[in-house]
Length: 489
Image 1 (cartoon, one colour):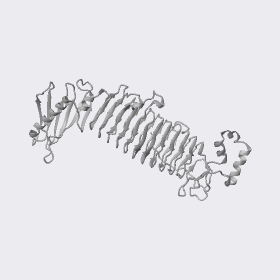
Image 2 (cartoon, rainbow, N blue to C red):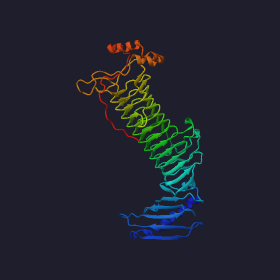
Image 3 (cartoon, helix red, strand yellow):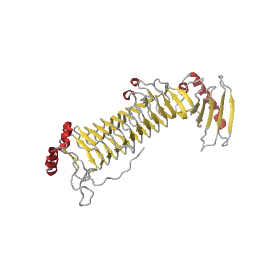
């Protein structure tokens, strides 16, 4: 804090302390306005508002101009003269103090209200405070560095438009950059536009990023862009209700735990949500559309991924890569209402073990589920596979059962029958046969698909099931498609 700012705050304290004795005992609603001689060229005025509190409680309020411009401090003070929590109002036309100087003059617990206008960015917040805009406040980095750096605990940012950071990934240019000191940072109801990285939580524990609109860079090549929200080692942090478009990944997290990503809308990105080395966390209620991949879950374990939607994504709706001991339930992957086809693969599972895939809907993809690389001990039941060109692609020789507690999955191409009316097919469903294995291993063999030899091979398998080469068996396939409601954009 500069000596000049400190002296002004000390003046305010002295004024309040001298007035407190007069305020005590005054009737509710009495107001005083007293001019005070200033030691500087700035005229100071103090307005005290007194009212009868409960018991011996006393409340006072004062306003003190910081300069000849419109910045003021209004502080609420209790009967303890040492208490001083300020509510500061600043305008962008201020000539005497920059936004950084105003931030440096605050004390823990202050609120700095910015009037409508554009302010120069590249600022650092090193005091617990609330920086608040009214929806018409722009803080611009002018294409250089980080627009706002939060380097203190319990900081709150709201109602701001944060824009135009630098574009250097090597130094992590961002709209809002929160350091490891930014514990309990709350970033809400802001707009972040044209930044390399929208919000970066780097080592910040228990942060909350909610209800922000983040529009990243679309003018750069994909690998040159930053992520909408980026977390590194930010345990306990929550990302809730944000809208993210453009940039590289919507939400990227690595080396963290105990995170929650809830009810975010993510579009026009590479990956909507990208998990790396992050455990014991939750991803739920999110909506992904028009991305390369919806939910890329990699090298993580003990996750709860449920009630998410991937609609109209390009490559995969859901990708599990070295993902273990996690729970995937009530997710939907499919096309948009306007398109006829979903992603290339609804689900891609690569070396993922001990997971549960329950009650998900996979519709109209080129491949419903691609299962490979030794994935084992996964429970797959209650899912619907509807009008996928290839329901299952499993390149392996082991026999895998996809049902649980006498309940399997619904397959739209299953021609089974149900004589006893229990809504379970009377014969098992096998999505792949020896011909499928042959084509996957030797793609040129597609030329022989209509040959008599292939027809004979398929007829032989149907008559002698022992000829099946291994693969997926659903012993209790569902006869009717379960009806479920999914969130939409």
